[in-house]
Image 1 (cartoon, rainbow, N blue to C red):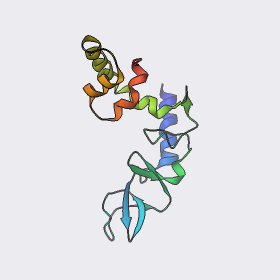
Image 2: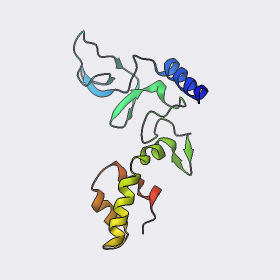
Image 3: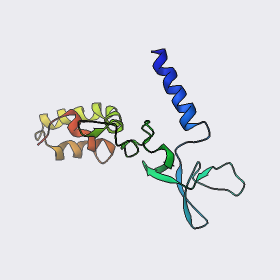
Amino acid sequence: NQNALQHVRNFVELNKGEDRKKGHLVEVQGTSKCCSTPWVETGGDSVCYDKFVKCDGGCIPEDWMSDGWPDCIDGTDELSMSANGKVLPHQLGCIHCGGVILSAGYLCQQSEGLTRSCVESIMGPGQCNVCIEEFIQVP
């Protein structure tokens, strides 16, 4: 839908801007800052925000909190966007895990039985472990 796409473009241009992006937590003269690059050179191109919040191992400008746009995969910046007790970014983040979870579940079902520990052992550590219950019911 062209209207929806235009709405998203307008929101991003108005509220996020070309020069503002997710950042990196860095130490600048003994103070933690959120900067556009992981290294801050004197007179370089890095833009730093004094007011920021942690997000997905990095950071975002503080005014991106509760702005109606999910920036963090874990949903910590948009807690009001939830369905069934889970924030929308969590659910969207789980989409890419579906195939791996279902495959691991099938392998477990064919071998030692479908349990969470079996599925996790086949998948190994990673982001998808928090999404297991989105796709299969395990004891």
